Image 1: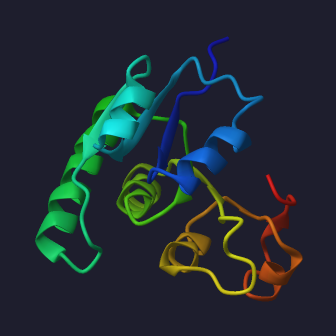
Image 2: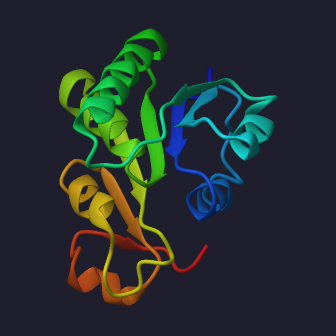
Image 3: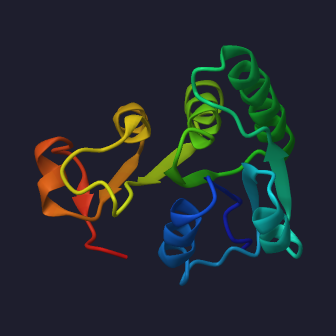
Length: 152
C-alpha cells in the first residue's frame, strides 16, 4: 500500500519550521511542497518535489488570483489525498480550492505565535479544515472544535 499523497504548504520562516516539526514522524515520501520562491526556500526544496507561487501581499488581488490559479493547476496535476499546512496566506488558496473543488482532506496547524489572537489564515482555515490543531489552550476559546496538541 502506498503512503498517502500529501501537499505540504506554508510560508517560509516560522511557519515552515513548525510544519517541519509537525511532520517529523510522517512518511512524506509521496509528498510535494507549495511555497514562495526565495533563496532560503530554494535551498530547502533542492531535494524535494516542490512548486513555487509568487510572494505577494494578501491585498494584491491580481497576484492572489494568479497564485490561486496556479494552486488549482498544481492540485489537478498532483491530486493529493491530504493538504497539511501551518499557513500563512500562501496556503489558503491551495486549501480552499482543494477542499471545495476536489474534496481533499485538510489538516491545519495554527502557529505557536497565535497565543490569544490569530492572524487571518486560521479564521479562514477553521471552516474548511477536517482537522484543526492549536498549540495553546487559549485558542480553544476562538476555535472550540480544534484539537489541542501543545507547542511543537
